[in-house]
Amino acid sequence: MLGFLPSFIKAPLGFLLFFINLFFWYIFFFPISIIKWVVPILSVKKFCTKVLIWIAAFWIDGNSLTIALTQKINWHIEGDDFLPVKGWNIVLCNHRSWVDIVVLQKLLNRRAPMLKFFCKEELRKIPILGFIWWALDFPFVKRYTREYLRKHPEAKDSDVQLIKDACEKFKLAPVSVMSFVEGTRFTLDKQKRQNSPYKNLLIPKVQGVSAVLDAMNEQMEGLIDVTIMYSAEKVVFTDLFLGNVKHIVVKLKFHPIPKELLGKDFQKDGVYRKQLTQWVETLWKEKDITIDSILEKYPVTA
Image 1 (cartoon, rainbow, N blue to C red):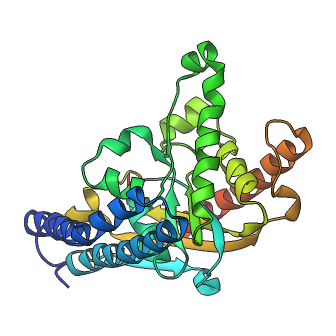
Image 2: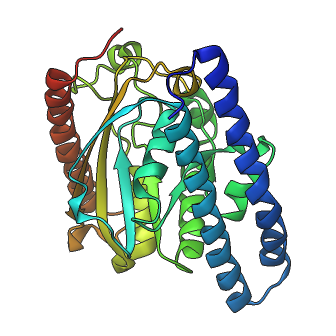
Image 3: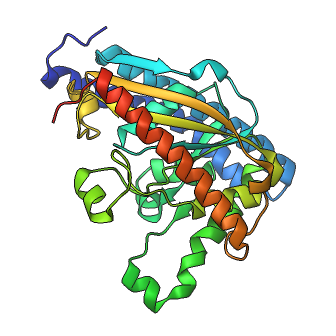
């Protein structure tokens, strides 16, 4: 609607509306979060969790409305006919930009259970947002260097346990557990350094997925496979408000999770570890082909 405005007007307007929307819903979010934290009764915590998810859905609606009002983006969405889904799901997506989160929330809000992300520990310190993610039971995980893990091998499994603990809270209400299995945003430089076998993707890390499937077991009903591509090779969050994102292409697929991949121990069961790795690698090969087909139809700019 306001996409015709010059960037120096619509960018600050978009940011302003984002912050107004955040502060407005935080007024309702904060007291419910405190009740959930303080009251030790499980039924109260369960009720508060549902209320917080309800508030968060309106917050996401506001963000999506802000983008629709201030930006002129051509959306190309395919494969979403299986939505809505109501049960517990895991969501796997390629990671191109921080804009991915906004796109996923827009597409899946009210069409799938609340998205729960694995957040870096550093994000806990972000004012307001860090509190919201904590109150919504988003797991905060730490990123260790290879050198640190060599000196402290016990730290390797600490994030896995954090994820399993978070999954116990996820059982209170249906959720969509989101994982960027590449572990970082894709760049050609990272791809070369990894010597990735994929043309458009980084190598997937499956241990976080295994922790979720182990903890949730048969409660986990399926996998929502999302592929996102933008009009530019490199997209930063501010591009979303500056009008630099001309089109967004999204392809979705739903995969039932094989029974043999549920409730197993990734560390101790070598057969399972191989099965899960092969399953995710197969999904990644298909995603690589999907991205090639997207790029043929919607070429990106440098």
